[in-house]
Image (cartoon, rainbow, N blue to C red):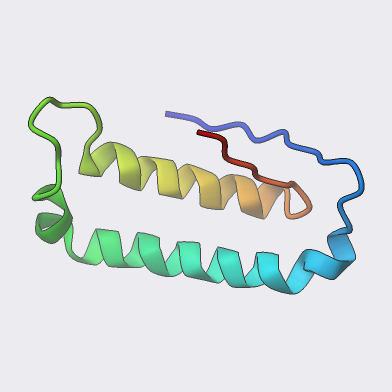
Length: 80
């Protein structure tokens, strides 16, 4: 699984948001560490219909962290 992040928002002030981004990255690292340290705890939340899994979520988290390291000034937005 791979994740490519290419998000840019007009008027975004990267300098103003650096502390928030660093904090978010640290939280994402802690989440990944917790997931990997307690797989059985989180595998219990795998849906019975197979739409998503612990393994896919851990892979997704690793991919996001990697991309955040590669592109520290990227803006990640979610819509849903």
